[in-house]
Image 1 (cartoon, rainbow, N blue to C red):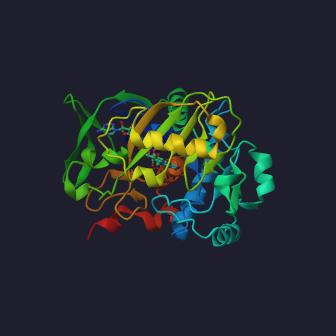
Image 2 (tube, helix red, strand yellow):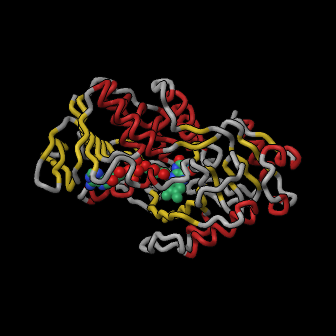
Image 3 (cartoon, rainbow, N blue to C red):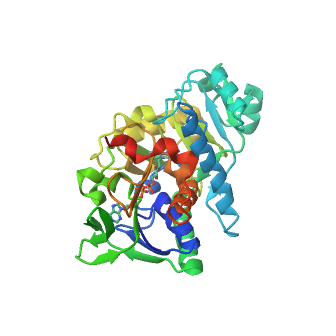
Length: 373
Ligand SMILES: Cc1cc2nc3c(=O)[nH]c(=O)nc-3n(C[C@H](O)[C@H](O)[C@H](O)COP(=O)(O)OP(=O)(O)OC[C@H]3O[C@@H](n4cnc5c(N)ncnc54)[C@H](O)[C@@H]3O)c2cc1C
């Protein structure tokens, strides 16, 4: 089987890796650079605990967590997955497709019923885990600890699995912009690139995230999207001890390597203009820094060093869209929020469907067909 995968973010790299491993002859086409889309601007918390609005969506994300552990076993030198735990306290804003987190008791109870590693953390234990946290910002809030949660360096992941697929399974990586599908009599037979060259395949898998409708070109093949803007501020390197990720009403923050911290907030994201300049003096970046210093006063003189802004690839109803579109054979689309959590799972599930013809039940609620009459 010849397969084309469009987009080398965390989703496309996972799909390309698994397809190539299953014996397909895979060409991965990337316009910019590996991980150069939304995957490079992500908080990248691998979790299912923020996905409580629907059990199938929770299960899908839980499978995502498990699949991260599986793919790690295939790379003895893997350095992209960090699991020091995540600490959350009351009042955090919801993620797209997530819970509002407003009732920590209910949330913890539900998560424990569903088998998620989550526990209540006393304020004493919180102080022991993260002694530099300002206790005043926690107040008397209930604290939840996810001891096995963490984050994935999505660009490192994508580069590693693509490298692995090239070395082990002969994947071809092409730099170029796909400008359209080649469709004949209801069948997708390949893609056309910006320079007029064409690539033929038995199956085209569109993993181009927020740009997926540009690739699909024709409205009949497009997934309605409701993208949202996200801003991440990166601090200067700071000699402070915070080890775990924090999800708090003020700011979400976590270490980002080399002493830097990554800062973001759903509340502030709503104020960010997509076309605004991603510079350290960006007003929402400065607000994030101010909030981070409230949470961690030891940040003291630390400034914002860099800012990145990205658009989340979110289907209109906020849930993943994974599968063929009606009336077009040879074409398969994967567009989703939570792609860092889901990437490794989707790689395997999409391969099972395309190469082995096995319909994965985890995807049954998330078919693109729901958007088409
Ligand atoms: C601020 C923020 C915080 C987030 N936090 C989390 C989180 O905590 N946990 C989580 O799981 N998810 C999180 N997400 C969501 C997650 O980052 C995305 O769902 C995920 O990165 C999407 O990956 P992708 O591979 O589908 O898309 P992308 O990473 O955007 O990859 C698509 C690729 O396609 C390429 N491309 C586009 N058009 C073309 C074309 N015409 N031809 C060739 N190539 C093309 C692009 O260059 C890009 O490299 C967050 C997102 C943001 C913005």
